Length: 88
Image 1: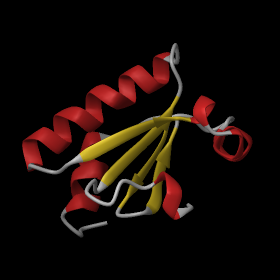
Image 2: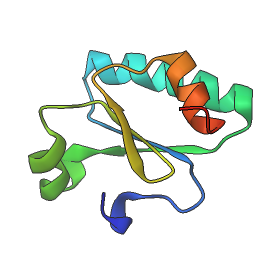
Image 3: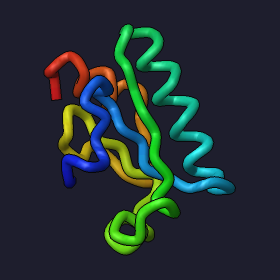
């Protein structure tokens, strides 16, 4: 992942696009887990960056934790919690 897509204050980044039902599902899980754990998260649309669209277009939604790719297509709440507590 390039530094240009990471929000320095967010531990979790969700890449997706508008109108993506899997992205909507992932957003709900990420928002709930991050709120529960007091962790900041950010979201970016791959449609805003041709390189992101090329690189991740077939994998969205894609989640990153602390700058490293964590998951794609679906987000498991328990797995995300473990990643955020260092238990992965």
